[in-house]
Length: 397
Image 1 (cartoon, rainbow, N blue to C red):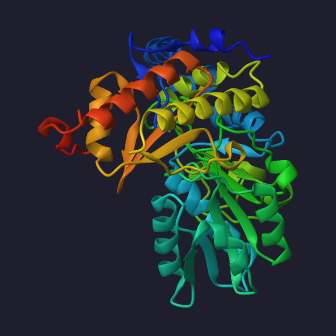
Image 2: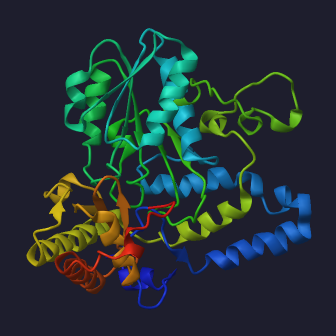
Image 3: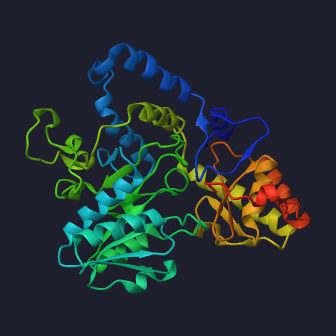
């Protein structure tokens, strides 16, 4: 069994703060500062450019990919890291479309994170007017598989409500319809058990600053199914995806396997922090994470619904149908969330009326969940949110 009291001790958590926003930005592992300092002072500072060889910076993207792969059911050598999630979405989608050249439609749903849809729109406009993005309700995705669909691109866990797709079932139906399958795991990796191999997913992408706690701006990852990895053409043919980057050839030759999906120079300092964060996962069983996540989220729902009827559950009631977050709708959700934050309970808000709460067993406790639910009910019931400072919109919600 995973010792969550031990994992909690590995994070810097400000005294008295109940942090339920790890689904947006995870807290800092205590080893992160030392890791960054080592790279800055001992490696960059003393080795300068020699760090690429002496400190083996160049292998970091694949080393981190191996650690992430263990958490998402990916075989060795099938995940690499670097760049941003938007870049990885673009790469996966461009490569997937080329694998299915006779079709022109990308199917997604309106629960997908908007940036995925933005990247798809931009790419499809570049490819020509006969390409189109078809966006449907999440529950209706499987009803829209037909012989025009080249790629199905979905986020497994809805960022707003936590509603979760059945990855294996949808992937199977997509393949039966002749489509290529891409999964965005931004709200899945480190939150719920994922098995890309068992699901037979073609591509997957995700970020590392949420449940993986890699810090703001932490690099994204991309997975390519091993039997496809030497076939896909990376549309963003960056120099570090080249077969021989330091040959400085003027023509591009893709590297072997998933390494061809590398693009630009890896952010070494940020990657060193991510490497420290991923060490927290050593010995952690994702089945234990899931069981504790359900325990925490169910307790939260129970207490909020017992304490107020003004906040309405927006997430699936069945814990097996949602990820590791719970959302409540409240007409003045933004102001209520600011009042919560002022009371040292941190969640976040998503327009138009959703208050989101992430549950991260690595560091969240039952006692914190009970405290947060009580404060939320008090704020909603008493109208404590109705103050000018809580209504003032900030740049980040």
